[in-house]
Image (cartoon, rainbow, N blue to C red):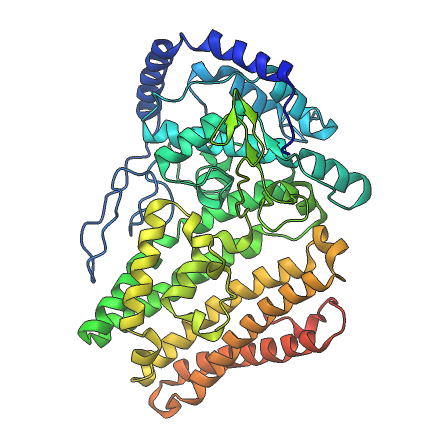
Amino acid sequence: MAAMIPRARAASVLNKTRLLGQNARHFSACAAKYQAAVVSSSNAAPFAQISKSADNWTNVNTGSEFSVTPKCGFLPRHDPLAVLPSYFEKLEEILDEMPIYKGDGTYGLLHSGRFGERVERELPMYDVDFVFDNRILGALYRDYTFLASAYLLEPCDIQFRLARNYGLARRILPANIAKPLQTVAARLNAQPFLEHSMSFTFYNYKRKDVSAPASIDNIEPIRRFSGCDAENSYIVGHVAAAQHTGPMIEASLELLGSAKSDSRDVFDQALQTYTKAMDNVNGILSRTLKNTGEYASFRTYLSGCKSQPMFSTGVIYEGTTGTQAGLPLAGAPEHQFFGVAQSSNPIASLNTHLFQLSNLSPQGTLPCSDGIDKLRPENYRAFFAHIVEHARNQSIQSYALQSPVSSAHYIAVLDQVLAYRYRQWANLRDSIHLQTMRSSSEFRSYLNVQTRHIRDIAELILRTRSNTDLEMLTPTQRATTDNVAHRAEIVRRSLSRVLEDAEPSQLATSMIAY
């Protein structure tokens, strides 16, 4: 029998709904004025849409804020809306009061566990049926997914801070979050749950100076769970790194197109472009994603409600399908969604699909093989399907090995891919929030899967070098290839040692390659 929501709370929400039900015209006027103000005050012009590429890639939804192009990469076409229209004033107020540590140095609602009560008591049932502007929909999606994760996981964060275990999350998402979120998510063809790009990172930044570029020093998060430096760095770092994904998109399309047309010079140049972009990505992330104890202060709120111990079976969305009069019925559907992890970054999926790294893990154990790609923005999903199809027909590895120079450039790309995945693995392994799980068989099994995959990438580099005619390379190319092989060998040996250990332990400094 599904848990029942107190009727007093349901009645309170219905009263707020009646009060707001007459405000549609007010919202429309506010939204129009707001949109005009944002457009006039920001120099963020729409990114151009790519219509044709080396192998005819087109975005399936050209009006989406998330369109995959060489101009914007994986970032949205406009700067995200930082403030909601005034119609959503109470929603904005609650979000501002939400973080554990607010920007003014005081404690917020999540610090003392008062957030859920505030939502139940004060958040109106906003009518979003007449919202169709993509930028406002994107902002609402970001904000309602933040609300949903904060509401559901607040008890787990409190429990973790008290006893270093998670306990149980709230099982029912109240209608004043669930219904608007379902509507907005459906309009965006997205999951009604916190997502990496559309919620936590790429649509969650604002520029301090709108006339200046979106550099690390000029951007800051819009929404936060904890408000700590580590959370700020995580969001800012991913946004800043994503500014280099435009060249990666262009290079990936050129790689597939040139392999198909046998254009060796174009192929080699595209490999170098991709390598440089990945080097920039790795450089930014190595500076911003510092693994500190503060990571635990927001990591709980990134958890999914699928296969997680804090959610026994999933989450019921009150007031949606399977409920009546805002209350869940027996047998109401329980939603299960993945949360946000480092592997949620679309860069991880692009590397995996373009270079066919899934072939190294036949059991389907890569981050993008667990279904996470299906939860990305609509154009991301189409782009990755496009890359998978063309990479299957035009193997980058096979074509690269036909030329010693191409092979050397391919090894350099794999070096950057390995550095990216190795850093993710190290952060996963040493994250403070996982200390209580380190001895569990489930965590050990998951860690071993990731460890083997990264060791496999190192071994792929070594095999590729052994199949390359090094005598045909310039001295500089040979030296670069030797350096990459040296790092790959360190990774291979260190991860083999990790797999042999009975318990996870810190790597010696001499065993860290990147």
